[in-house]
Structure formats: structure tokens, C-alpha cells
Length: 487
Ligand code: ASP
Image 1 (cartoon, rainbow, N blue to C red):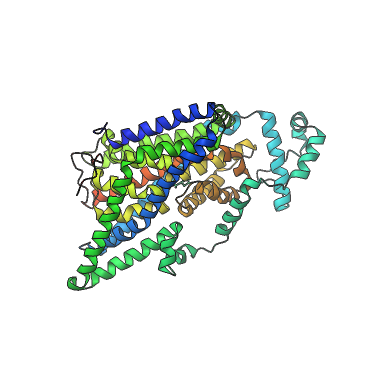
Image 2: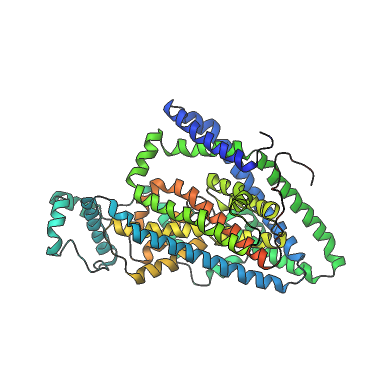
């Protein structure tokens, strides 16, 4: 057991979590699981989150201050943003191709889709005062009369007209927070990156970009000072950085147990019995499978093959062995921010990415690069349109590419952030934002999977950048977590 690699132990934790959930829900222990097991999962996420901010702060400062040539930072920054943008657009395109070829929305019964279409038309009319953008009108066009009559009775139609603006309580707050984001001005993102008050930025996990900005500025300023003046501060910062890294190592030793608790808790909260979980997925199976296929292609084909093609000496299996602990953690926590400390550790210790690169590229990636989220948004929006018999034109799908890119950049690295930001993508092509309620039931599981893609994307890009900067030196052996040794 002791010599077993960490990722294998984490897989065991995951499997045991699922097996336990089956047993516990059939014996009616869900309450017990939520009261006594789930809190340990929360403890784990909290520890990782409180480590993330100081770790980013100290590692970015120490990475930037120790750069021999500050202009390298500009080059690395440009490459980082370009690659992040390219991978995101690529992921969205994969999602769009899959959803247009598979057409998961059409797997749903025709009558249901006609009803959805009518509800959509009623909504468009009340929201915009105009007819649907695709110029089909089921409610007034005699061509569709038969379909409408076959799908619902006049009484049902009246009922629908009354209900048109009723909102699902579960999503009301999500609509509000997306509205706020939508109302922002074009350069707000730049203003938002600059801390107003450092203590406030450090206190809020969602303000990670402000911490990164401060740390880069601090590091550059140190590099301008004479070494005699700056080096005492650098020694302290390096030492603090080492302490936080050690903390990651210590909590990771308990990761298999914590992952077990997290998974048991998620399943217990989702449904009373495993049968219910299957039921939830059944009605949305075509959609879920399309998202999972896209995410799977990114994880198992695209990223490893890109890394293998670009990085000399990289093999398919080594790629996964290097980053597996971060991937499993992303899956169990559904948060790239909580996973960040482990992603940094994996990349530095196993992949051999230099600290200069990892401390700069990964924290930015955790906040702005979400390939999985953007792929999922593209699939979900087109699926929802298909479900309501709305045809999206090529131009509208290009709008999806743009808005899904922006909204994945804007999404916070926490659970369900992608679902909230999807509201903006839906609105950009004239669809009803309240439809997020339809995909809501399966969101948590898909969130776990898309977070794995988000983290794998960050890891791949930082490996490529390290390689291109001559800052990649992959060790022969994987890092050994089995004992917390002095290093
Ligand atoms: N949970 C995702 C992350 O942290 C974001 C999302 O897609 O909801 O990366």
C-alpha cells in the first residue's frame, strides 16, 4: 500500500466512494453520510483554497523576481494568452461539431419538442415583443397547426400562456448574477484586474487575477532593486513559498480519504437512491453523453497527443501519470481554484516545468482558461435550441464561439460557475436564459468532468510553454508522496 503511487490510491478512494454511496443509499444512510462524512470533504476543499492564494502570491513573486530577463515575462505572457485562447476556441469547435452531428436534442420525443417550441415562442413574444428569429411560427402558421394540436390541447395551451414568465426558483439568483456580468463595460475586465485594496483581493478567492497582478508588479519591482536590497525579501518569500508547498504535500497524503468523503457527499446530496441518479441522467442522456464524449476527446486524445507531438521524450502514459493527482482532485472538488496548489505541485515535481513558468502560467490558467467549460456551454446551448426546435444559423453558432470564449474566461474557478455564465451565451443568440434549469439536474457530474478538462488544458499549455522556453526538465521518477520527507 505504501509504495502505491498517489493517483492509484486516489482512484481507490473514488471507487470506494461510489461503492459506499450505493450501499449507504440502499440502507437509507444518506443523512449519516451528509452529517458525518461529507464535512471532511469540505474540510479538504477549504484547506486547498486557503493554501491557493498565498501560494500563488509567493510563487508568482519569487518566479518573476528570479527571472534573469524581465522581457521574457512579456513574451511568456503573450504566448500564454495566445495558447489559452487557441485551446478554448478549439474546444468550443469540438463541442459544436459533436452537437451538430449527434443532434442530442432530437432524441427527445417529438410532442415534447413541439410543446417546448410553443413555450419558446410565447417567451420570445413576451420578452422582445417580436417573433422567433428563425422565422418559423408554430402558433400562427397554419403549416404547423396539426403538429401543435397533436402535441397539446387548447386548455394546455392556455395554461402555458399563463405560465410564460414563471421562473424556476433554483435559478433566480443565477440569472441575477449573470445579468450583472452582462451589464459590464468593455474595459471593465482591465479595471477589475487591478486591486483597490490588497487585503480585500487576498481575502476573496474570486479575485485571484488581482493577486496575480499585484504579485507580478511586486516581483518586477524587486528585479529593479539592487540585489543587496531585494535579496532579504526574496529569501523570506522563497521560504514562505516552500512552507505552502509543503502544506500541499501534507494534505495530499490524505487525498484518497478526502476524495472518498467528497464523492460520497456529492452522491448522497444528489439523490436518495442510486436508481434516482440513473433516472436523472436518463432523460438527459443524449445531451450528457455528447458533453462527455467531447470532454473525453479533449482529455484522452487531444491534450496528450499535442503534448507528445511537441515535447520530446513525452509518452502518452507519462503525461497522465504526471498530472493524474491534479485531474482526480479536479474531478472530486469541481473547482480549478481548489485544485491549483496540486496542479502546480504536479507540474513542477513530475512534469519538470520550472517554477518561473508554472507559477506564472498556471494561476492565470486556473482563472481564465476553461476549455471544458466552454465546450460544455457550446454543447448545452445548441442542445437546448434543438430541444425547442430552434434552428441556429452558422452566424449564430459563431456568436456562440465568441460568447462561450468570453464567458469561460469570466467564469470563476468554482463549482457551477460555467452554468451561470451560460446564461450570457443563451442570451447572445436570443434564447431563453431560464433554460439552464433544464440541464441543471445533471450539472454537478458534468461540472466534475469539465473541471478535469480545465485543469488538463492548463497543464498542457504550461508544459508547452516551458518546453518552448527551455524550462522543461522532466525527472526520471514521479514525485513520491508516500512519506512527507524533508526536501
Ligand atoms: N467548476 C469549473 C472549474 O472550477 C467551472 C465551471 O465550469 O463551472 O473549473
